Length: 178
Image (cartoon, rainbow, N blue to C red; front, side, top):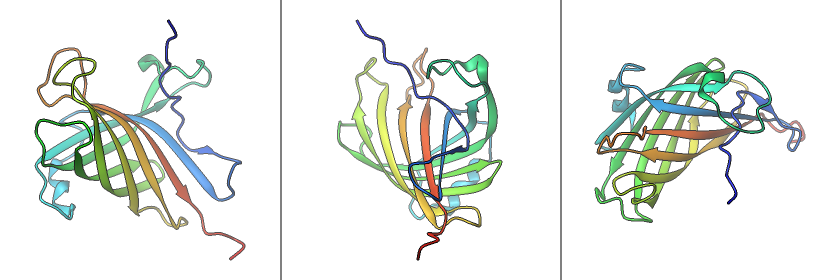
């Protein structure tokens, strides 16, 4: 049986694949004390779920791509705001999503949809979801970008499962050739 390894967590990884691109990869873990959930008032839709979280990034290089909580460092806070319309979390159903990431480089805000992947794995009541969001606010020096996630949502607070995500944020600098 092969074992899949979680994503490598690197904050501020420069890529050589595309000039003027910066990639951030990090993990969020829900924490009610991380940030004021009142920030969801800025969402352009009626919010019915607020998820304050802490952001963690890989603290040491190496590790073969495995995420080890003992080797992470806190790198900021986040606030996710959602409008969930299907509380059974049917596979393929969508939720509107607005998120703010407060990182050392500055504030990033994104807006879009998350899609429910499963509501029964690893057990009924734990929801797997994937998000694809457009950056609507970002630090000076960038022209835009997007953020994607691989997320676990535990609305029933079942023991043994945290609500949290692995995020990839891609932001772009102005094209020097245009």
